Length: 89
Image 1 (cartoon, helix red, strand yellow):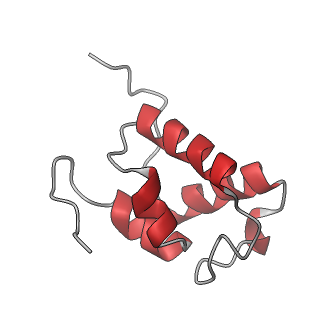
Image 2 (cartoon, helix red, strand yellow):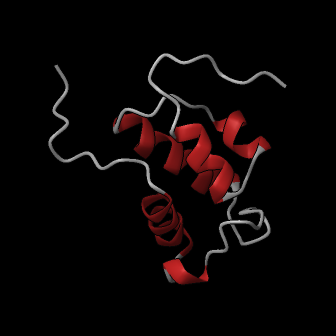
């Protein structure tokens, strides 16, 4: 069984802080409605976020996040119940 004691829920606040950490900016500088790609996020940093969040139990992939690169969209994706079907495009 995985140790989940240190895991935090995937709230918009957490996502904003995590993205700010990899971009080396203040969380308040991240606009949740604007494309994170336009705010400086690149594929390497996106992969790092995916791996961190998967380690905390997220069920998502790089492509899902890259196709919808705003914090609001990511919060919706990460709010899915475990095992819920992924939206098809």
